[in-house]
Amino acid sequence: MGTQSNEKKAKRELGKFETFFPIIAMLAIVIIGKGFLSFNITAMLVLAASVLGCFAVYCGISWNEMFGEIAAKIQKSLGAILLLIIVGGLVGAWMSCGTIPMLIYYGVQIISPQWLLVTSFLLTAIVSVCTGSSWSSASTIGIALMGIATGLGANLPAVAGAVVAGAFFGDKMSPLSDTTNLAPIAAGSELYSHIRHMFWTTGPATVISLVVYAAVGLSSGSGSSASSEVVTQMIAQLDSMYNWNLLLLLPLIIILAGSVLRKPSLPVMVLSAGVAIVEAKIFQGISFSNLFSAFVTGFSTNMITKAGFDNEAVIPEIAKLLNRGGMESMMSTVAVLLAALAMAGILTSIGSLDKLLELIVSRAKTTGSLILSTIATGWIMAMTTSNSHVSILITGELFQEAYKKRGLAPVNLSRSLEDSVTLAMPCIPWASSAIYMTTCTGIPTQQYLPWAILCWMCSILAIIYGFTGIGIKKAGGNDEI
Image 1 (tube, rainbow, N blue to C red):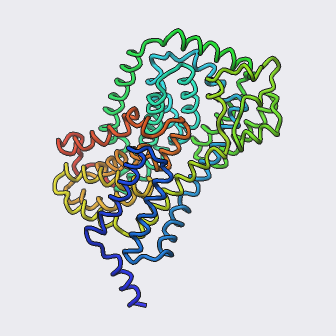
Image 2 (cartoon, rainbow, N blue to C red):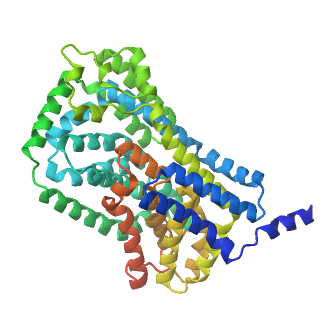
Image 3 (cartoon, rainbow, N blue to C red):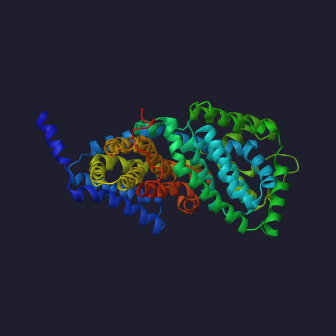
């Protein structure tokens, strides 16, 4: 038995080539294939997983070992996968009920086009702080804001970026957020000291974001007469399709209340969809047959039965806005996530990531290089594991002793974990958070990323602070546990 263990360990002793090749190959295939050549992201992830699999065999790793790691990754992400599928059904149900159309109907009349980007950031930030969930805010107010943006003829990637940035503001700063609680645990700091310390990076990044959003909005003017004409048509057509009622907000309230009360997301979403289906039958008169179809295959305007409504007269803007949702619409998204998890599982079985992290830590000799190494490691972990919890825990454990040796308070590490890992997740196209944000906004990651200013600005500020000493807290305060 001991001999077998030693042989197995010997297979995992990696040199520089074995350490760097898998990660470089994976990133090259995905970034070049998707980013530059616009190949299908699922195909690129499968190709990367195949290359990594062949390399794993070269390193002496068996298929059973690889499959074990893949299965473990999928098992840990099963909740997220099921959540993605249910979100598709939820959107179909909300469209049938009129929850999202009502928010759009009133939103396009209330929100000024010049301030749409600022409003999108602030509203999603408020909701995500209250719920502690970027996913909840994106799948509720975020979807409605994208509908309003479509109606106003706004820059959709910009609005999507503002929605994503606002959603992750709360994911990072809310005491109800899982990552906000996990980061101080991983770093050895205290929750509220951690949150206060994050204002050093989050505060300026928020101000920069709002200034850019305001400048872009004000420079775009109030919109053309053509877009105003389309908005007028949309308002009139939505009014002819649905019977408005304040109770139509109940499915939305159920989601927000469930998030605030920290109830499990999956049953809360199923309950919200069930209420939406019942309300769609009562208030909109849609048949249960069509409602179940909307939940599974997606909503279509031809399901509307309101007297006086003519489906043949539906303008393209309304059709594009409302004809969406359904669990089946998420299958391609699930395929991307499964391919990414397979890639992460094989990479874990090779062991090159652990070796790379050791090399990074050993070369961090100053406070600036230590912060830079932490941020870089957080992004690498996020790109390779596609899991914020795993990335935060591993990175925190890896760097905790190094921060102590340099006499730095743990809040510096916990802040860096969130500046990198938490905010990197919506920036990586194959990560579950980015996939989810794309699903909710309808905008690919690479298009909304430049506008999600907060998500990458915090990393830049953290590195600047590390080398200048600004916002760096020394050990010996009251932040340690």
